[in-house]
Image 1 (cartoon, rainbow, N blue to C red):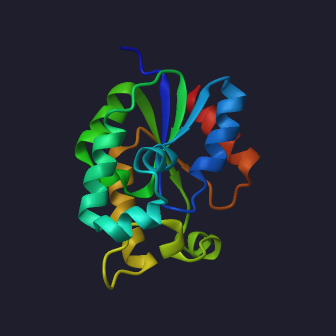
Image 2 (cartoon, rainbow, N blue to C red; image 1 turned 180 degrees about the vertical axis):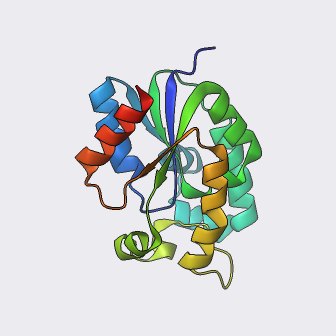
Length: 166
């Protein structure tokens, strides 16, 4: 199978969904946000699902749902916690090119509001810095490409990604 999808991974607040929509328009592709797919399947906001099921159960659910996404010629923006799901990441890598949307910590903390309201998978006692330090190595491990969007606006980020993928 040809890797016809482009998969965006990275921290919450990095801009995966916003960049993904614009990149899909630029490339004439579909856009899929895995967080929205999960919300559609559960009938709940991510924050509600995490609160009701707990973090480990949510990660398992996300892994299951994402590993069943069957699309082609799509830009797929993933939830920040998708990197915890081995099956999901294998599936995404088999069917797409994985791009890490890298955003520096200071910029991420400026962009993010309440982590709980966003539906961020955050363990008891874990803060944004600890989450960042835990996840960034995972994103780097899985990504074929990495684009630092820290000082870029959406248009610049999209063009930088498009250029790397050409």
